[in-house]
Image (cartoon, rainbow, N blue to C red; front, side, top):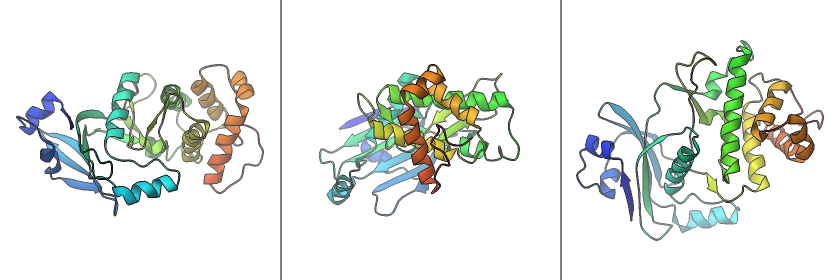
Amino acid sequence: MTLWVDEDFRREMGFTTPRMSDFFAIEGEVFREPAGSNRRTLRFECGGRGYFLKLHWGVGWREIFKNLLSLKAPVLGARNEWQAIQRLTELGVETMQLVAYGEAGMNPATRRSFVVTRELESTISLEDYCADWVREPPPAPVKWVLIDRVAEMTAALHATGMNHRDLYICHFLLQQPWLGPDESLHLHLIDLHRMQFRDRVPRRWLVKDLAALYFSALHIGLTRRDLYRFIRQYAGGRLRDELRNNAALWRQVSDRAWHLQDTKPVVAEVPPRG
C-alpha cells in the first residue's frame, strides 16, 4: 500500500494516523462520475480552502481488455495523476498542488486509489480567456506572452518523455487577475490523469498533443505569425531551421487539427492557415 499526506493538510483534516478508508469516506459536491467508470471526482472544503478528491475503485478486467484491444492505454487509477503532478512540479511547469495520494491492492482491475489536490482559485481557462479575441483582439504583447508560455510548457513535457493526450487550451488555467506582460504570469496545466511517461515521446503522440492545441485554438483569431511564433518557441531555435528540419511533423500536426475540424487545409504550407 502507498499512502502520503501533506502535514498541513493532515492537521486541517484532523487525521492522526490517516488511512485509505478516511479518504473514501469524504463527502462533497460530485463534479464528475462517468457512467460505468468506477471513478468519481468531488469537491470539498476544509479549513476555509477548497480541495478536489479523485477516487478510483479499479476499472475491471473487461475495461482493461477493451482499451487494450482498441490500442489504448487504460487508466488504472490515480497514480498517473499524482506522478504527473510530481514530475511537472520538478520541471517547473505550474500545475495543481498535491496534498495527498494513496493506492492499495495488487490486482490492477480492483486496485483502489485516490489523489487530493488544492483547488486552483481565481483562474480562467485559456479557452474562456481567449473566447472574444476574434471580435476584440488583445494587445499583441498579451497574446505573445501566452503563446510563448504555452509553447514552453508543451516543449518541457515532450523533452522529458511526457505527453498529455488531451492537450487543449481549456486545460491551461490562467491565474487571475493578470493585467498583462508587466505582471507575473501563472499558467497551470490540469487534467493529467491520462498522461504517459517514456524516455522519448513517440511521433504519433507528439502529433496528437500539438494537433489538439492547434485544433482548440483554430477560432480564437491567431494569425500565421502567431502560429510561427509558437513553433519557434516550442523548438527553442530558429524558425527557418525548424520548418526545414521538421516540416513533415508540422504538416502532420496541421492535417490532424483540420481533420478534427472536418475541414481540409487549402494548401499544404506549414501552418496552412493564418
